[in-house]
Image (tube, rainbow, N blue to C red):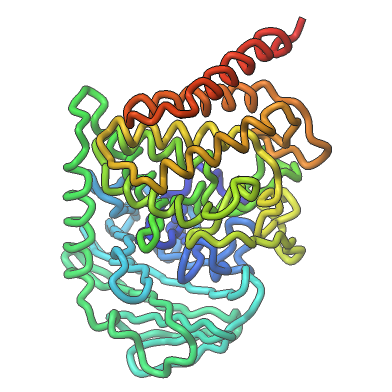
Length: 453
């Protein structure tokens, strides 16, 4: 039985993310970036497909924690277990990337004495490939194909070959603190990553400081500030820092309904989702993210507007071939588990409206619009004028014949409306008459046909 999805917490380094359950288990992790093959995939399979649990040994082992929470205004997660013999805390975080990706887990005794166990079972290539595990001084390294994952600890490590897991037991008393650092590197690099030499306390301080500085930029000062900032941190965690792209989710194949087959891979940059995210960030004062995303957008969709895709990869790549993973049981048995997404080839008319709406919002927020971006606006509108009447796959990514969707037509109206507004702001009104006529025609058609009598 899979844990409820709401039991998972997110940690991220702005290039990839991990999902941490209330039982102290990291059940999802892709390295080195969001769309890389998973090396911990129990979320959509079983423990045999990879997990990393740190929790007390004994009667409470395998059960949920007593309490947990993010540290205020950060993506640093504290999980606390109260046991008959004492209380212990695990602090999980991913330092924003400077070199290689790593997950840091700090185990600390708060009172009494607690025997804690770390059990790491790596399965590379989407939870399928068992790595070769060996000790290397104070580290353990797991290697398979192009991937190597190093585990550095502050105490002795016992490699349990019987279950293909690295097990580490330690008893923590009040005031004792130990750290485990998991770092990915290309397997052809023979030496331990230099990031393993950075003290965990230093990484923790720098990571918490990064998130607090970022959160402090939020302009909202109302009664719900804590909830607003937490939501914004989550959105920020889904940005891919090197390019400015924003993924729709860090996971794949979580079902629309339990047992269903609409289980899609969302580790990519949907134009629709990205524009809604940018709208929230802009309204909260985060111009840097908006500027980075606009730069990503122009690079990703460069070319003929006829070739505009519904989604792109985090680096702007266009090809995301869809495959199924029959060795994964699926979340709550929801199969198939998919990697890649064939919706990349769908015609979804609404994305034109969402892109132009975000461009308009960015312009009104004071972000400059270079001449080549205005040329993009004109090209997108030229395409819409020719094709807005056509059926499409729509917001719901219907896999079947194209149909007429009211939402798609309304977003075509939004596209024309926002293009007109941007034209007025920029003093570029050469096509205003044509765009105004299109907007009026779309309005008439939606009012005439867009209802169920």
